[in-house]
Image: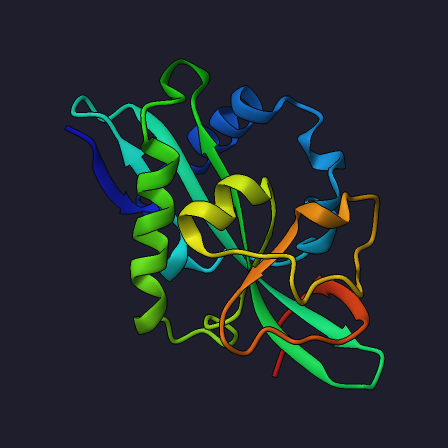
Length: 173
């Protein structure tokens, strides 16, 4: 049996090791890392999948980001991912379980932007199972290369504006 627990309950070194195994040690060079640079994961939307023996099987993290529309509007959003599953446990539904758990947490999420989710991922998978589409993301820019067809969003208030996506870093009071 697999237990889904808050990611905060898992040692960060174990999470980093899993991410390295799932995506490779050069994962920090990906555009998604640039988008969320300097932010902290949203705890209420980030989870881990643990085996009965406590082994870490997978994780999902969500991040506070902002779409800075060229019109001047700033739209808070949540960037979903990475969704990581240890290579020896892939294709067992663990990633899907993590996505479903995160989506179940969205209605109760108190963080700004939780109703507007976005990610960079496979449109055939994330569209079919979770309702993410590229319908309103065609004019978005990211700080690095990406395939426009893989820039996806979900939510009733997804902005349809031209703009730059970047980290939403909290300012000190």
